[in-house]
Length: 120
Image (spheres, rainbow, N blue to C red):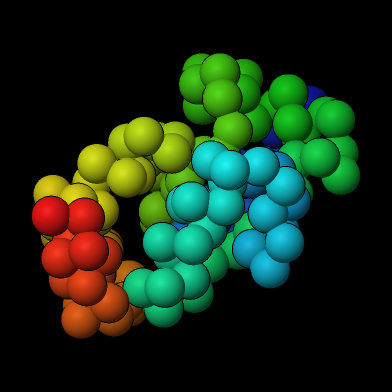
């Protein structure tokens, strides 16, 4: 097991919600990362952001860890959920709400509904 893999495992285990992204939740560095961080921030989800641009080993390691080729990547309670398209679809369908509820993750249900209303 590589150091990057160990670090990734520890991060997804120690935090309920983790977003591996380009940039930070305060300053995303790509549109896809910005969209997912924006959804989580708007919904009031407390999440750990990991800037893959700061560490090339983590950037490649997370792709190998999840067997998913793109960034961002969202993990909830240690489970890989998906990237931007999947998170967007889950948000609009209400599946993300259901996942958060099932996993005991606190979020603003009214904010989630506002996102759906704005995209209806």
